[in-house]
Length: 294
Image 1 (cartoon, rainbow, N blue to C red):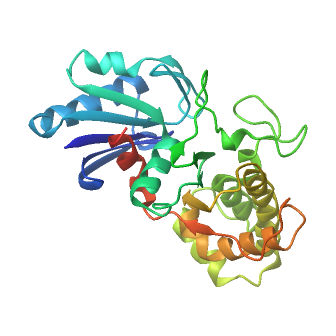
Image 2 (image 1 turned 90 degrees about the vertical axis):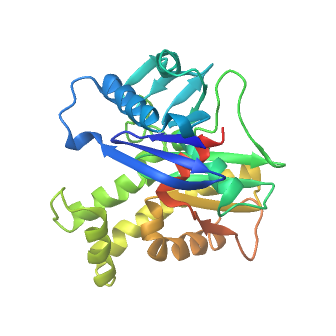
Image 3 (image 1 turned 180 degrees about the vertical axis):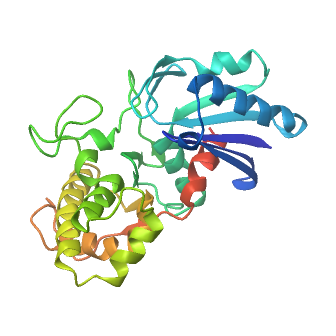
């Protein structure tokens, strides 16, 4: 079996994967622990897990938010890492194949091989969560750049001189259309505490859809989200678009509005009567599954 590791800005999830199926999984959340050195915590946690299952493991894959160049994490804004060589650190303990790739691409690979976009040759996968990431497939192959891996969907500029992004630029897509932005704006409009979690917020929204404050926030969010999605459609003209991340929990509310806006606005260069947008099927397991098959 293979180990897949999904390393996020606030959590790490590790799973044993057999033919695209997770047979065992463990997870820890950073922000609930008192961690002095995040890198040491991550590496020790991985080593403990792998050692406990060593006889069953043939390779390790790691999904991490950020830019990967020659197996080095050149920059991970959400984790605060630069030039981080996690593979060399792990290989001091493990003599096995270890690979690493951007987390959104790993999730996209999983959806392409086993999930919502399986069977399509030309597809765009978007993950909406704390930030925005994505993967693009053309003629059955993952699109990647030469010097850098590319398809940094969340950092398309959609508003010149707009909101400041953690990356240092202004007007990035994810500063307007991440799920974190939507949840933050909903809480502000409803005077809710920051500690209201996503599931509770979703129920509040569902129970009060006639509230103009809620509809106003959602409509503005959809407008910005559709600008970014239309850019991707106009450039790649995919057969299908799949959206994952924490979006899946709000998809019942958001997806019909996304389709309607795209089809009834002037955003698309090539007009159409329908649009194939799907909800990702593998949920939070996509990063683990995708990284395991690198």
